Length: 518
Image (cartoon, rainbow, N blue to C red; front, top):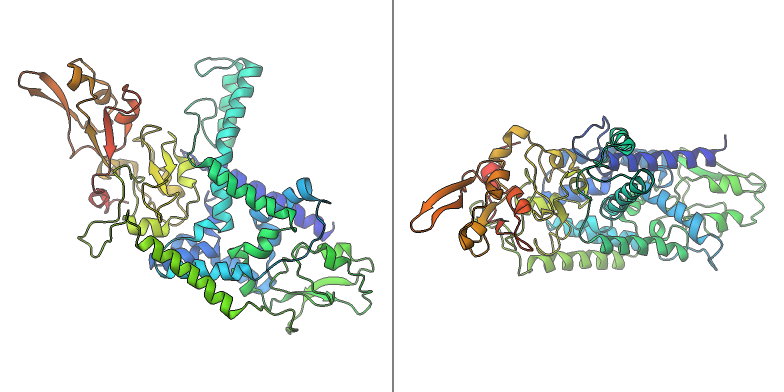
């Protein structure tokens, strides 16, 4: 079997594994393989998050394996394993083949400047790697953009071909159960229809990355990918190298066909920092003069070396510093100067998942992959918009009106790749406070109209609703703040529309009360 064919099969297998693990990111977790595997093996996530959090992210130490593999064999991860690279190759095949006037590398050093900027922001305890890290970006895109439409289409097909409805029992019910058992992805035939805020913004970013292929193949990988830049730094002198025999006719076909622009004008030379070991040049060479093999002694040439401009690197670092400074002066941010001072919080609607670290540590660890949102069985975890200020953009927040934090679930802590959400036991949930419910007496039926309404009391999982006699008014509901953990089931169930009469607020954030749990 040809090496190129083996590479393509490997790409498909790992891309399928990537999608499979996202599908398995659900409650209850049944996958024997860590569902956050691809983010865990991302060395850029591990380095940047460790710098921002000022601690070693043990969950991301698998990235060392990719670094070691790159030092020995070059950027094989980019060419063989990376799901973003596979996505770009597939989009090129289906949308852009034969539609480009030229195919030359453009500003391949940009990615090193971007890498410098991201690492500088991390040095100043600002998490920005989520913006451009390919594995975080692609995971977030699949979760926020594609999960809901796939679920909707499956339900629509079930209704059209089997006459299924949410409450019916028939052949399609068994089909739905079979799909749920086999995929473990979400309750396809029951449960809420998934919905995610900011999905169109995330889709626009993804379409922009794909559209860059119209300029040159793998434009993202060549010029913008910070993970590719990090791996390029590690692959300057790998053992596995491209070797060209003396019978090369210099026809230039390998130069034209190289998807990474790794071959300069002299086809006998190779920019090893750009080469992704795809072996296309081996297959495309007419005289078969090219092979890949072990070369223990490095062979340098001015065109094979990494040559980013020192000034541009400093400029990239300056942009990163400016970004960190911008978040530091964000008016929505409160500075935590000591353990006893208020943590950063900008909105009473900033309700974090149970088990979340302190706010400053949480935003520094979270890479916005969307895994916790996908795992949430009620769809209540949503990407933050402005609840947490600039630095908390797209971090997970609980939106009770969409879905509550159900008492029997702890999936979010199990799927987090950076321990921004710490694992916890189900029996500890009554001790984990994520917010506090408050009754709006002007909206509440029992308070405003004196009518009997027991919805919040009946739904409350923690028995936090208490009834007290009010002189001249009768019995009225109150929230026992010592029992209320802020799960939001009362707000989710409240019949008052559009704004619930009982709502959950962060109230200064009570996570510290459950900080020893996990």
